[in-house]
Image (cartoon, rainbow, N blue to C red; front, side, top):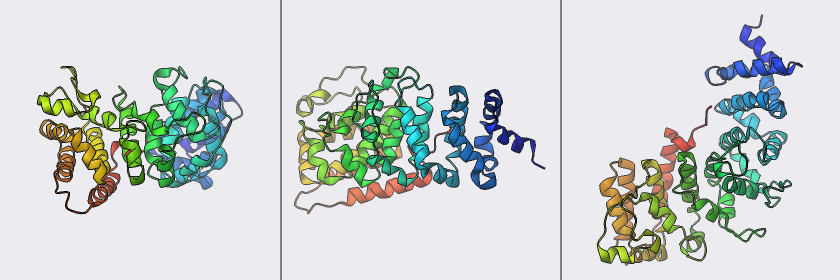
Length: 365
């Protein structure tokens, strides 16, 4: 005989919406504590839940929350991430300006990106909403949604912060990195420049995801001239400002820094999250993999900023990253270019993934 919980799972497809609402609401806690409950009969409960993302908004809220949590299970994650119609439905709903569950859909997409095949989003197209005014490429729509949706300005029900985690996972793939550094025809803008303005944003989730996205894109060494050019991506001030506090520098040092970094106010604070600081320093380390990158960092006095960061941030990961960058900036340029810093960062990322860093974890609700 089925248990009471198993019977409750059966009620998620009850013809009466009030029964579906009660069943899905009561099942939310079990999506984290007993995911196996939803794997019976060849994942039939999961298949039913996927159909209910289009249900009444309150029912859909419970359903999407359950799916967000269930994505922590590898078998269920594969089922969700490889279902084309399901993915298309999420992408269709999330750009609707009145969608009440848009934030939950953002979290679900972020979790689905743990499955590598989600990179196929790059080739997907769908009509853009009039409010969004984007191209028909889904990836462009998601970037524009992330930018225009901050602070609930596009959809009063959502801030779309968790799309930053989606971008961070997507940019682990070379083809997605290439997208983020290529000017888009519909608006003439390089996508990564739309994200860089959020490196000092109030949302921890948005800052963390954007920092990881920038670092991942910086693995594309041929794009480094674009990263460092003031007329293109101009990434340095957006990576350096978050790691700077209110420390004072010698006048000679300060006047050689980038204009945006000079004469900072006395209440300037560096990012409170050491993981974000470490990510930014590792981005600088990646950008120092060419002679041109190192020379530019030396000329704008990146070293004193790293020196102060090392002194003032009591965190092993941050201090190790700072020491590696200092070694690169201070080295004898008679030595040939090396890619050791890129390999070291890749190894560090691999260890971070094994330890499940915050931005690599499945989001739970």
